[in-house]
Length: 310
Length: 310
Image (cartoon, rainbow over all chains, first blue to last red; front, top):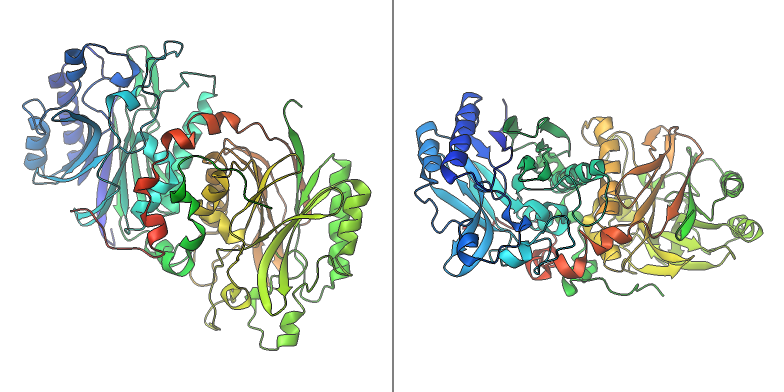
């Protein structure tokens, strides 16, 4: 391959039951890393909150029970095999997990390089859902209860031969998040997600929800001239169906690889990190074409304001 | 139809030759308005710079010749039939044209209501292309020479029963532009464009250029819960091929209607202006989920900055 190619494996994961221990789940992940290595991957991307069931779907009152879903150190005894495997195979990985930092709690992703060292950490900023128990929902979505808003911004790191950023799940729907990465010249955006097949509150055609997922990642890729690797936890997890549809998207917004199961599945693409250069120098030459003096409303308000046309 | 339905006609136009007079072109547009009226349209959307050939493709040195492409009054003698037809039929319209305002020049769009009155004006902010003659290009793209950056911001107007905003051509690729409209609760975004089938500088597969057009409009629609009506000037215009692919997109980012020719063609959709309400109250409840404190870079810089990860 010409250019600066990073071969990326998206390691979609089937359901992780609430009753599954870390050892079992980490074993599946090590297996995916070995399959990725056999396919020539430099980097394996795991989903959001990959180590456990997606626990924000439950209202959990017992603090000890809740703490069982968080990692209090990284690596810890149970996650160390991932780091050992990275070093052994010379394969980096991206991991989403629930982070306990003293009393603070974050929905976090890290990037681990081929030497097994943590080279980047991101904490999810766009927490969806709600903070209080809402029993009328088909299932809860308590991310606003169980996590703080991330406090690390949207950094881009120069690592593994490229400019790499991370988003988590709902972040991918927000063009602001992609743009802050794009304004740092991002070449590859790593995203883990857990998205239910059904809306928990109202009926929304499931095919539209898959469409929204791909549309958001494709637009974020094209509008910033960057590769996007979005990886789901999928399938029927403790009674809730998760959509899957993990995808690797080119800087033109094309789907280069897409998962076709709702189970553990590896998708692979050779990501030429120079592939977005023409877009960044052309239609999205930010310095030439952006007009921040007209974007003020984006930072002046969170919620909508009245129409300003007169 | 339930809800607040505005029946919108996208009036794609085939080529307008440099030698065509305004009378001929306005005649075609009046015909499209009559066809739209017969299909029950409340509003007809015409392309960007609809009244003439897309003149930024030529380096024109003679100021009088260049002035021939601009409108010095709106309506003027030659455009008055559009306003008369609006009043006669009770059909509003959206028109893109080159505006001369004294010595100033803008790439402008107006919205005219069913009574034939101008109720909104927008001046294009994201001017693509270049300011100097670049003879090595297959054709010029001199919008930065012939127009000033718009000075009216991105307003949304409460008019014709809804909250309506306007973008012009290249604006549609910029999520910032859509978001400023979205933050004013926009329900329908009207867009005219002129997009060549081929990139004038380097080879880019034409199918990707069509994909980028639809992707940008679909993402802008979904991420703001708004209808988008994007209308092209299409076909072989004075030797340059224009892509067409005009589309009306739902607030879910689905293509509800799409042009299938490169000629004068009407596409119609019944736009229920309440259709985006669930999106605005749910996944894109801006007040609940946006985090402007992390978006600062969007307004602090036009061009890219070094990666900030450490």
